[in-house]
Amino acid sequence: MGRFLRPLLRGTTYTRLVHLWVPMLVVSVWMFIDPSRPWVPAVVLIPVGLIPAVRRGEGVQARLLLTPGVGDPAFSVAPATAWRDRLRTVLWLEARLALGVVTSLACVWLPILAYQLAGTALGGVSDPVPVLADATPHRWYAFLVPLPLLVWYGLVVGLGAAAASLARRLLGPSAGERLAALEERTEQLLERNRIAHELHDSIGHALTVAVVQAGAARAADDPAFTDRALAAIEETGRAALEDLERVLGVLREAERPVSARPTLAEAGRLLESARASGVKVDAELTGPLETVPGPVSREGYRILQEALTNALRHAGSVPVRVRVGVAAGLLDLEVRNALAARTPGAPVRGGGLRGIHERAALLGGRASTGPHEGDWQVRAELPLR
Image (cartoon, rainbow, N blue to C red; front, top):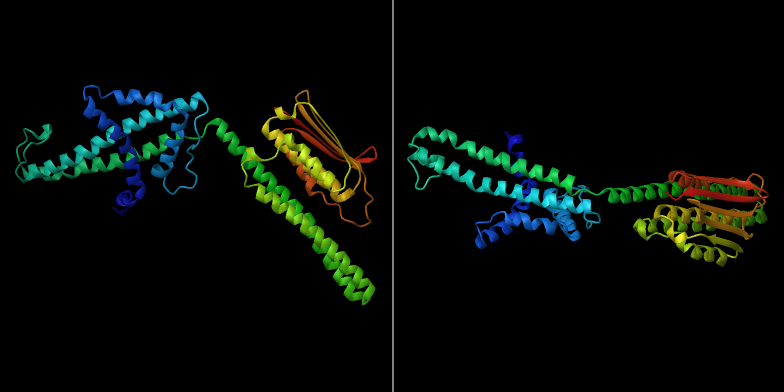
Protein backbone atom coordinates (compact mmCIF):
# COMPACT_ATOMS: atom_id res chain seq x y z
CA MET A 1 0.00 0.00 0.00
CA GLY A 2 2.84 2.37 0.84
CA ARG A 3 4.41 1.81 -2.57
CA PHE A 4 1.04 2.37 -4.25
CA LEU A 5 0.52 5.71 -2.51
CA ARG A 6 4.12 6.88 -2.89
CA PRO A 7 3.43 9.04 -6.02
CA LEU A 8 1.02 11.13 -3.91
CA LEU A 9 3.94 12.09 -1.67
CA ARG A 10 6.17 13.21 -4.52
CA GLY A 11 6.29 16.87 -5.47
CA THR A 12 6.84 15.87 -9.12
CA THR A 13 3.26 14.53 -9.32
CA TYR A 14 1.82 17.95 -8.47
CA THR A 15 4.25 20.02 -10.55
CA ARG A 16 3.30 17.88 -13.56
CA LEU A 17 -0.36 18.48 -12.74
CA VAL A 18 0.27 22.25 -12.70
CA HIS A 19 2.10 21.95 -16.02
CA LEU A 20 -0.93 20.25 -17.60
CA TRP A 21 -3.31 22.81 -16.14
CA VAL A 22 -1.49 25.87 -17.52
CA PRO A 23 -2.93 25.60 -21.08
CA MET A 24 -6.41 25.37 -19.61
CA LEU A 25 -6.11 28.98 -18.44
CA VAL A 26 -6.13 30.08 -22.08
CA VAL A 27 -8.96 27.67 -22.90
CA SER A 28 -11.01 28.96 -19.96
CA VAL A 29 -10.62 32.57 -21.10
CA TRP A 30 -11.65 31.63 -24.63
CA MET A 31 -14.73 29.74 -23.39
CA PHE A 32 -15.95 33.00 -21.86
CA ILE A 33 -15.43 34.75 -25.20
CA ASP A 34 -16.99 32.21 -27.59
CA PRO A 35 -17.95 28.80 -26.17
CA SER A 36 -19.43 27.76 -29.51
CA ARG A 37 -15.95 27.35 -31.04
CA PRO A 38 -13.87 25.40 -28.48
CA TRP A 39 -11.42 24.34 -31.21
CA VAL A 40 -10.03 27.86 -31.75
CA PRO A 41 -7.22 27.60 -29.09
CA ALA A 42 -5.91 24.45 -30.79
CA VAL A 43 -5.76 26.27 -34.14
CA VAL A 44 -4.04 29.31 -32.62
CA LEU A 45 -1.30 27.09 -31.19
CA ILE A 46 -0.11 26.17 -34.70
CA PRO A 47 1.41 29.58 -35.62
CA VAL A 48 2.51 30.08 -32.01
CA GLY A 49 4.52 26.86 -32.09
CA LEU A 50 6.33 28.00 -35.24
CA ILE A 51 7.93 30.92 -33.34
CA PRO A 52 11.55 29.85 -32.56
CA ALA A 53 11.57 31.27 -29.01
CA VAL A 54 8.51 29.24 -28.00
CA ARG A 55 10.58 26.05 -28.07
CA ARG A 56 12.96 27.53 -25.49
CA GLY A 57 10.06 28.53 -23.23
CA GLU A 58 8.48 25.10 -23.44
CA GLY A 59 11.83 23.44 -22.73
CA VAL A 60 12.35 25.58 -19.62
CA GLN A 61 8.83 24.82 -18.36
CA ALA A 62 9.32 21.11 -18.95
CA ARG A 63 12.59 21.13 -17.00
CA LEU A 64 11.08 22.99 -14.06
CA LEU A 65 7.71 21.22 -13.84
CA LEU A 66 7.94 17.82 -15.54
CA THR A 67 11.36 16.78 -14.22
CA PRO A 68 12.19 19.05 -11.27
CA GLY A 69 15.54 18.34 -9.67
CA VAL A 70 16.79 16.17 -12.54
CA GLY A 71 20.33 17.15 -13.58
CA ASP A 72 20.02 16.34 -17.28
CA PRO A 73 16.38 15.89 -18.31
CA ALA A 74 17.28 15.97 -22.05
CA PHE A 75 15.03 18.93 -22.92
CA SER A 76 16.28 21.52 -25.38
CA VAL A 77 16.41 25.08 -24.01
CA ALA A 78 17.51 26.69 -27.27
CA PRO A 79 15.30 28.41 -29.87
CA ALA A 80 14.24 26.28 -32.82
CA THR A 81 16.65 26.63 -35.73
CA ALA A 82 15.10 24.18 -38.20
CA TRP A 83 11.57 23.68 -39.46
CA ARG A 84 11.61 20.13 -38.14
CA ASP A 85 12.10 21.47 -34.59
CA ARG A 86 9.32 24.02 -35.09
CA LEU A 87 6.91 21.32 -36.22
CA ARG A 88 7.90 19.19 -33.22
CA THR A 89 7.08 22.18 -31.01
CA VAL A 90 3.64 22.51 -32.62
CA LEU A 91 2.95 18.81 -32.01
CA TRP A 92 4.02 19.21 -28.40
CA LEU A 93 1.72 22.20 -27.84
CA GLU A 94 -1.26 20.34 -29.31
CA ALA A 95 -0.48 17.23 -27.25
CA ARG A 96 -0.04 19.33 -24.10
CA LEU A 97 -3.42 20.98 -24.72
CA ALA A 98 -5.13 17.61 -25.23
CA LEU A 99 -3.57 16.16 -22.08
CA GLY A 100 -4.57 19.30 -20.20
CA VAL A 101 -8.21 18.94 -21.26
CA VAL A 102 -8.34 15.29 -20.16
CA THR A 103 -6.62 16.07 -16.85
CA SER A 104 -8.92 18.99 -16.08
CA LEU A 105 -12.05 16.99 -16.80
CA ALA A 106 -10.77 14.14 -14.65
CA CYS A 107 -9.86 16.43 -11.75
CA VAL A 108 -13.29 18.08 -11.82
CA TRP A 109 -15.79 15.33 -12.59
CA LEU A 110 -14.29 12.25 -10.96
CA PRO A 111 -14.20 13.76 -7.41
CA ILE A 112 -17.74 15.04 -8.01
CA LEU A 113 -18.82 11.55 -9.04
CA ALA A 114 -17.24 10.04 -5.91
CA TYR A 115 -19.02 12.62 -3.73
CA GLN A 116 -22.39 11.96 -5.32
CA LEU A 117 -21.95 8.19 -5.05
CA ALA A 118 -21.39 8.70 -1.34
CA GLY A 119 -24.46 10.94 -1.18
CA THR A 120 -26.57 8.39 -3.04
CA ALA A 121 -25.50 5.74 -0.57
CA LEU A 122 -26.63 8.00 2.27
CA GLY A 123 -30.00 8.91 0.77
CA GLY A 124 -29.45 10.99 -2.34
CA VAL A 125 -28.14 14.41 -3.33
CA SER A 126 -29.61 17.31 -5.23
CA ASP A 127 -28.68 17.78 -8.91
CA PRO A 128 -26.80 14.50 -9.34
CA VAL A 129 -24.66 13.84 -12.40
CA PRO A 130 -26.65 12.35 -15.33
CA VAL A 131 -25.36 8.83 -14.69
CA LEU A 132 -26.93 8.93 -11.21
CA ALA A 133 -30.05 10.91 -12.10
CA ASP A 134 -32.34 7.85 -11.98
CA ALA A 135 -30.43 5.97 -9.28
CA THR A 136 -32.36 4.79 -6.25
CA PRO A 137 -30.50 5.64 -3.01
CA HIS A 138 -28.95 2.55 -1.50
CA ARG A 139 -26.05 1.92 0.86
CA TRP A 140 -24.42 -0.43 -1.63
CA TYR A 141 -23.33 2.67 -3.63
CA ALA A 142 -20.76 3.25 -0.89
CA PHE A 143 -18.68 0.42 -2.30
CA LEU A 144 -18.40 2.30 -5.62
CA VAL A 145 -17.04 5.50 -4.05
CA PRO A 146 -13.33 4.44 -4.30
CA LEU A 147 -13.67 3.58 -8.00
CA PRO A 148 -13.69 7.14 -9.46
CA LEU A 149 -10.99 8.12 -6.96
CA LEU A 150 -8.77 5.28 -8.18
CA VAL A 151 -9.41 6.32 -11.79
CA TRP A 152 -8.59 9.92 -10.85
CA TYR A 153 -5.38 8.80 -9.16
CA GLY A 154 -4.34 6.71 -12.17
CA LEU A 155 -5.05 9.54 -14.62
CA VAL A 156 -3.22 12.17 -12.60
CA VAL A 157 -0.09 10.04 -12.21
CA GLY A 158 -0.26 8.40 -15.62
CA LEU A 159 -0.94 11.54 -17.64
CA GLY A 160 1.90 13.33 -15.85
CA ALA A 161 4.31 10.52 -16.72
CA ALA A 162 2.99 10.47 -20.30
CA ALA A 163 3.56 14.22 -20.60
CA ALA A 164 7.16 13.87 -19.39
CA SER A 165 7.85 11.02 -21.81
CA LEU A 166 6.27 12.83 -24.76
CA ALA A 167 8.16 16.02 -23.91
CA ARG A 168 11.47 14.16 -24.08
CA ARG A 169 10.62 13.03 -27.61
CA LEU A 170 9.25 16.32 -28.95
CA LEU A 171 11.31 18.82 -26.94
CA GLY A 172 14.51 16.80 -26.93
CA PRO A 173 17.65 18.19 -28.60
CA SER A 174 17.75 18.23 -32.38
CA ALA A 175 20.44 16.47 -34.39
CA GLY A 176 22.42 19.71 -34.62
CA GLU A 177 22.22 20.28 -30.87
CA ARG A 178 23.28 16.70 -30.15
CA LEU A 179 26.22 17.12 -32.52
CA ALA A 180 27.26 20.33 -30.76
CA ALA A 181 27.00 18.63 -27.36
CA LEU A 182 29.01 15.66 -28.62
CA GLU A 183 31.64 17.99 -30.03
CA GLU A 184 31.93 19.82 -26.72
CA ARG A 185 32.19 16.54 -24.81
CA THR A 186 34.85 15.27 -27.22
CA GLU A 187 36.78 18.51 -26.83
CA GLN A 188 36.69 18.20 -23.05
CA LEU A 189 37.86 14.58 -23.10
CA LEU A 190 40.63 15.41 -25.52
CA GLU A 191 41.82 18.30 -23.35
CA ARG A 192 41.77 16.14 -20.23
CA ASN A 193 43.80 13.47 -21.94
CA ARG A 194 46.35 15.98 -23.16
CA ILE A 195 46.52 17.66 -19.76
CA ALA A 196 47.14 14.30 -18.08
CA HIS A 197 50.05 13.65 -20.46
CA GLU A 198 51.51 17.10 -19.91
CA LEU A 199 51.25 16.96 -16.13
CA HIS A 200 52.86 13.53 -16.11
CA ASP A 201 55.70 14.63 -18.37
CA SER A 202 56.37 18.06 -16.92
CA ILE A 203 55.74 17.71 -13.20
CA GLY A 204 57.06 14.14 -13.07
CA HIS A 205 60.26 15.20 -14.80
CA ALA A 206 60.73 18.18 -12.47
CA LEU A 207 60.23 16.10 -9.34
CA THR A 208 62.59 13.41 -10.60
CA VAL A 209 65.33 15.95 -11.30
CA ALA A 210 64.81 17.64 -7.93
CA VAL A 211 64.99 14.34 -6.02
CA VAL A 212 68.08 13.13 -7.89
CA GLN A 213 69.91 16.47 -7.55
CA ALA A 214 69.09 16.79 -3.86
CA GLY A 215 70.26 13.25 -3.13
CA ALA A 216 73.49 13.77 -5.09
CA ALA A 217 74.23 17.06 -3.34
CA ARG A 218 73.79 15.50 0.10
CA ALA A 219 76.03 12.56 -0.84
CA ALA A 220 78.76 14.74 -2.41
CA ASP A 221 79.19 17.02 0.60
CA ASP A 222 80.69 19.64 -1.76
CA PRO A 223 79.50 23.29 -1.44
CA ALA A 224 80.17 24.03 -5.12
CA PHE A 225 78.31 20.93 -6.26
CA THR A 226 75.48 21.77 -3.86
CA ASP A 227 75.18 25.25 -5.39
CA ARG A 228 75.00 23.78 -8.87
CA ALA A 229 72.41 21.22 -7.75
CA LEU A 230 70.27 23.90 -6.13
CA ALA A 231 70.49 26.00 -9.29
CA ALA A 232 69.36 23.01 -11.36
CA ILE A 233 66.49 22.33 -8.97
CA GLU A 234 65.46 25.99 -9.12
CA GLU A 235 65.54 26.07 -12.91
CA THR A 236 63.61 22.81 -13.25
CA GLY A 237 61.04 23.93 -10.68
CA ARG A 238 60.53 27.24 -12.45
CA ALA A 239 59.97 25.47 -15.77
CA ALA A 240 57.51 23.10 -14.12
CA LEU A 241 55.58 26.05 -12.64
CA GLU A 242 55.36 27.65 -16.06
CA ASP A 243 54.02 24.42 -17.51
CA LEU A 244 51.54 24.13 -14.65
CA GLU A 245 50.34 27.69 -15.22
CA ARG A 246 49.83 26.94 -18.90
CA VAL A 247 47.85 23.81 -18.09
CA LEU A 248 45.69 25.73 -15.62
CA GLY A 249 45.07 28.26 -18.36
CA VAL A 250 43.76 25.46 -20.55
CA LEU A 251 41.49 24.29 -17.74
CA ARG A 252 40.10 27.79 -17.28
CA GLU A 253 39.54 28.06 -21.02
CA ALA A 254 37.73 24.72 -21.03
CA GLU A 255 34.81 26.42 -19.29
CA ARG A 256 34.21 28.53 -22.37
CA PRO A 257 31.66 27.33 -24.95
CA VAL A 258 33.17 25.40 -27.84
CA SER A 259 32.07 28.05 -30.32
CA ALA A 260 33.98 30.74 -28.37
CA ARG A 261 37.34 28.95 -28.43
CA PRO A 262 40.10 30.07 -30.80
CA THR A 263 40.20 28.94 -34.41
CA LEU A 264 42.75 29.17 -37.20
CA ALA A 265 41.33 32.57 -38.04
CA GLU A 266 43.24 33.70 -34.91
CA ALA A 267 46.46 31.93 -35.87
CA GLY A 268 48.18 35.31 -36.28
CA ARG A 269 47.84 36.00 -32.58
CA LEU A 270 49.40 32.62 -31.81
CA LEU A 271 52.33 33.29 -34.13
CA GLU A 272 52.92 36.73 -32.62
CA SER A 273 53.00 35.17 -29.16
CA ALA A 274 55.72 32.78 -30.33
CA ARG A 275 57.70 35.66 -31.86
CA ALA A 276 57.43 37.57 -28.58
CA SER A 277 59.22 34.64 -26.93
CA GLY A 278 62.29 35.38 -29.07
CA VAL A 279 61.67 32.83 -31.82
CA LYS A 280 61.90 33.76 -35.49
CA VAL A 281 58.74 32.41 -37.09
CA ASP A 282 58.42 32.20 -40.86
CA ALA A 283 54.70 31.71 -41.49
CA GLU A 284 52.74 31.11 -44.67
CA LEU A 285 48.97 30.92 -44.41
CA THR A 286 47.17 30.15 -47.66
CA GLY A 287 43.61 29.42 -48.62
CA PRO A 288 40.28 30.52 -47.06
CA LEU A 289 40.99 29.66 -43.43
CA GLU A 290 37.85 31.48 -42.32
CA THR A 291 35.70 28.93 -44.18
CA VAL A 292 37.19 25.89 -42.43
CA PRO A 293 34.44 24.11 -40.38
CA GLY A 294 34.46 24.94 -36.69
CA PRO A 295 35.63 21.58 -35.26
CA VAL A 296 38.44 21.29 -37.82
CA SER A 297 39.53 24.90 -37.35
CA ARG A 298 39.60 24.60 -33.55
CA GLU A 299 41.57 21.36 -33.61
CA GLY A 300 43.94 22.81 -36.21
CA TYR A 301 44.59 25.77 -33.91
CA ARG A 302 45.37 23.40 -31.03
CA ILE A 303 47.71 21.32 -33.17
CA LEU A 304 49.54 24.47 -34.29
CA GLN A 305 49.72 25.67 -30.68
CA GLU A 306 51.13 22.37 -29.48
CA ALA A 307 53.68 22.21 -32.32
CA LEU A 308 54.94 25.72 -31.52
CA THR A 309 55.04 24.91 -27.80
CA ASN A 310 56.98 21.74 -28.55
CA ALA A 311 59.51 23.73 -30.60
CA LEU A 312 59.93 26.36 -27.86
CA ARG A 313 60.32 23.77 -25.13
CA HIS A 314 62.75 21.39 -26.81
CA ALA A 315 64.55 23.40 -29.48
CA GLY A 316 64.88 26.79 -27.86
CA SER A 317 65.22 29.96 -29.93
CA VAL A 318 65.65 28.36 -33.33
CA PRO A 319 63.86 29.49 -36.50
CA VAL A 320 60.47 27.88 -36.98
CA ARG A 321 58.71 27.53 -40.33
CA VAL A 322 54.91 27.31 -40.31
CA ARG A 323 52.80 26.37 -43.33
CA VAL A 324 49.00 26.26 -43.12
CA GLY A 325 46.94 25.77 -46.25
CA VAL A 326 43.45 24.81 -47.36
CA ALA A 327 43.09 22.95 -50.66
CA ALA A 328 41.44 19.89 -52.17
CA GLY A 329 39.15 19.33 -49.17
CA LEU A 330 42.05 19.17 -46.70
CA LEU A 331 43.60 21.39 -44.08
CA ASP A 332 47.36 20.89 -44.37
CA LEU A 333 49.40 22.10 -41.40
CA GLU A 334 53.17 21.83 -41.09
CA VAL A 335 55.63 23.15 -38.49
CA ARG A 336 59.39 22.61 -38.91
CA ASN A 337 62.35 23.61 -36.78
CA ALA A 338 65.99 22.64 -36.48
CA LEU A 339 66.71 19.58 -34.38
CA ALA A 340 67.92 20.46 -30.90
CA ALA A 341 71.00 18.86 -29.40
CA ARG A 342 69.71 16.31 -26.89
CA THR A 343 71.45 15.90 -23.61
CA PRO A 344 72.58 12.28 -23.12
CA GLY A 345 70.27 10.52 -20.71
CA ALA A 346 67.64 13.26 -20.93
CA PRO A 347 64.14 11.85 -21.06
CA VAL A 348 62.12 12.19 -24.23
CA ARG A 349 58.70 13.54 -23.38
CA GLY A 350 55.95 13.18 -25.92
CA GLY A 351 52.60 13.93 -24.25
CA GLY A 352 51.95 16.86 -26.56
CA LEU A 353 52.87 14.82 -29.63
CA ARG A 354 50.44 12.09 -28.61
CA GLY A 355 47.78 14.76 -28.30
CA ILE A 356 48.47 15.92 -31.86
CA HIS A 357 48.00 12.39 -33.20
CA GLU A 358 44.82 11.95 -31.15
CA ARG A 359 43.33 15.22 -32.39
CA ALA A 360 44.02 14.33 -36.01
CA ALA A 361 42.62 10.81 -35.62
CA LEU A 362 39.49 12.16 -33.96
CA LEU A 363 38.66 14.13 -37.13
CA GLY A 364 39.51 11.26 -39.47
CA GLY A 365 42.84 12.77 -40.46
CA ARG A 366 46.44 11.85 -39.87
CA ALA A 367 49.51 13.38 -38.27
CA SER A 368 53.22 12.69 -38.37
CA THR A 369 55.88 13.92 -35.95
CA GLY A 370 59.60 13.34 -35.95
CA PRO A 371 62.87 14.08 -37.75
CA HIS A 372 62.55 14.86 -41.45
CA GLU A 373 65.35 16.04 -43.77
CA GLY A 374 67.46 17.35 -40.90
CA ASP A 375 64.59 19.16 -39.16
CA TRP A 376 61.95 18.29 -36.64
CA GLN A 377 58.60 18.22 -38.40
CA VAL A 378 55.03 18.21 -37.19
CA ARG A 379 52.51 17.73 -39.99
CA ALA A 380 48.77 17.16 -39.88
CA GLU A 381 46.25 16.62 -42.65
CA LEU A 382 42.64 17.12 -41.56
CA PRO A 383 39.67 16.50 -43.87
CA LEU A 384 37.26 19.42 -44.04
CA ARG A 385 34.24 17.09 -44.01
